[in-house]
Image (cartoon, rainbow, N blue to C red):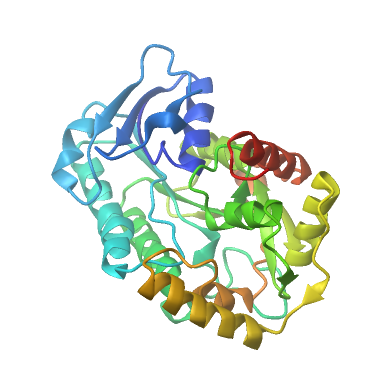
Length: 333
């Protein structure tokens, strides 16, 4: 099967590329002129794979890459919780997804897998576990990243309703090695390893082994139902539980001080203004993160288990692998 894959130079996309290559797929990987290709190392393309230089912001640059492909796996996304120009995020995540799906239709590509995010779901402050059928609207989205991913997902669902074979995957918070950027979840690990996590707030995440999320992309190509959304998650954990697990792995003390959201919001406000707007650097905390943190992002992956054969595995080995990778690559002592 010849597959056009976007996002292979990123964290999740790297693992998806490895999983597809391991199954013998003939991969054509999208890279930008400015892409750092180090994350393509370790992907065994079997002599058949190739890269294609293009950009989601320039749809016509993608057209040649789709010729002769049997499927598209669209993992690429602008994943940041702080961005000076939000328009760039919408161009990449929403306009880019719409254009790629249109070009895939025009090229006669039979199957598309779109990697959305669990961020498009409607979470609750009481920590009740949600699923794909929990009612949600654009008004429930906090911040530009969530809004852009929600709108992009709507483009994928709309395309499926019009007859295109598009499957939507909604990973929770993947963790594992090769998180080079790192992602916002990876940054929690890096800050903890550098002892920059003196306190915590009462929030929660669903952490998932990135290799299992990658395996689900392979499964979705043959088992996914067009138009269906599939949450790909692991363990529902409070932030304190995550920090305690990292402490058990590393021996670094877990913070004991829980701070109110009002204090966290005040800190984030000044971080955004001083570090972000005045110094022009990415702030360590943002108001968007604090607002998101008021809701525990606990989710069920039952549908993916039943329909795709997705596995929910303990996240501890993936956490250890992430920590080892961050240390080995100079992110932490």
